[in-house]
Image (cartoon, rainbow, N blue to C red; front, side, top):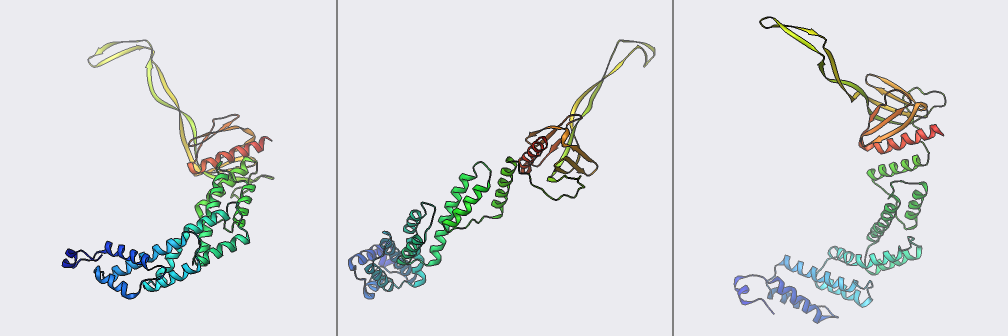
Length: 352
């Protein structure tokens, strides 16, 4: 059916009608393809421009490709039909290649899911996937990309399971690398993820009394090693006078106008409170024997043998000592978890 009369009079194309007519023509012509005369007549009947004609023909070819590829197999007669249809509709190789690859992604994904279900990609399975990709006219580069995406998805899911406790053991890491190798993927991570893995690895080591050793710009004693360094704000509790009042019995009498003489005893009463006071900011070094603080105005050393415990808070750690006021070390939130684990591991190693 051609354009309605009013569209012809106004010189308007009928794209929807053209799409319907082209679909009917393709169904009617199959297994052959329409010839150029039929297509030219359709273009003229519906008043299509060159650009619109290209779009409609490309979309029609894409539908034909999806219909053929949907069952994950392309028979010889189907391949020949699509080749002839591509020529009839004047679809170029550049236009047709992404159409085949887009249509083939769903069946290829199903095949990959089946092949990777046991988390192992055998040589036989690789060859089967390659044969399927060739049959569906998918390039090797696209197949490699899709396989790596599937493998990465499997790796990510397993990594999420292993890292749910925010710890990375040597066994966990070995499993992930072996999984990557067996499914043909790669254990590749970005810089942010790598920092997270390093953090989880260190937390596991500290949980298992495996203290790291680092170089530090401080003088260490014989047999002493440095385990950790971090920036802290050093606070201590100071008694501060908040106000002064006076108490006592007294009396007064007037001497002259504006002057009174008081007799009796008046005792000042100081009101005080304990207040956490910032003393300095600097770097704290945790060694196998001491806590060494190097600040801007003061240096302080606390022997671990005199430390009773470490109390962790949301913004820092308080060091409970056998004598003296306990310092409070304010620590950045990003460093607090590692610092708390490190303090605990150091003190446990000292007490063993």
